[in-house]
Structures are given as C-alpha cells and as structure tokens.
Image (cartoon, rainbow, N blue to C red; front, side, top):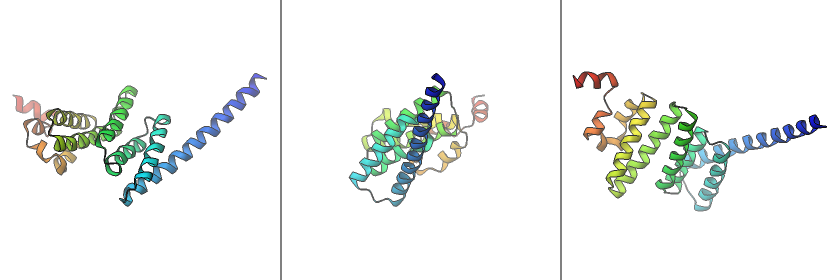
Length: 179
C-alpha cells in the first residue's frame, strides 16, 4: 500500500516538474522576444514580470530567468530599483549556494550597471560606491569582466576615479605597484 502511494506521489511530482519546466521555457522565450522587440506595453510588461517572478520562486538559481527579470524591470518597466532588487536576490541565492562563477559575476555586473544608472540619476555617493563594489565582485568572480569594464561606456566616469583605476589592476600588477 505504501509503495503504491509513494509511486503516485512521485508521478504527481514528475508531472508538476514537467509543467514547471515547460512554463519556464515558454516564459523565458516570451520575455526574451519581448525585450528584443523593444516595444513595451504596460499590461504585457506587468504580465511578464509577474510570470517570471513566480518562476523565480521555483527556480531561484536560474541565471537566465533572473537576468531577464532584471532587464524587464529596467528596460520595460523603467524601474531600476526593482531590477536591482532582482539582481540582489539572485546574488544572495548564488552566494548562499557557494556558487562563485560566471553567473554570479554577471549578476554583479548587472547590479553595477543598475547602481551606476541610479547614481547618474540621483547623484547619491553611496550608489556610486555600491556600483564600484559590485564591479569589484564581478571581476573577482570572473577575471574577463576586467576587459569588459575597460570597454563599457557606462563606467567611463568610474574608470577616471582612483577606485575605478584600481579595478584595472590585476592582483599581480597591484602587488608590483605597491612595492
């Protein structure tokens, strides 16, 4: 009797997992296409954000899901604060899981972009400092972001600051220059 109940529960769970996975794929494709199209409508934006936010509860460590949710908030809803909130949540999940990888670096990078955008809009020094910290973390997770940082026009002002110049130094260069 117990075996039959266990089998039924496993079958039910497998069906739910399949439905969630199908929904994830559908919603990610929908969100990506919507962002690529670049024509945003409030009701569709709200619907997509709601769908992706629900999926984040199921798949909190899914890179593409979290990045697209942040982009929807930023680009379609014009709410960098919510985009930053989405990145910070994802960063928290990755850190808690101990996953210091390129996905985490990308989340830090996006957070830095949102923070720098907010700094430019509000001129709040704490936002600039947080953007620099996020850049530092992105580079620490994935060294190739140092090269991206050199080329990204969004960070031109930061690169001219002492803290920004320090981000350009590789750990071995920093050690040599301290001597």
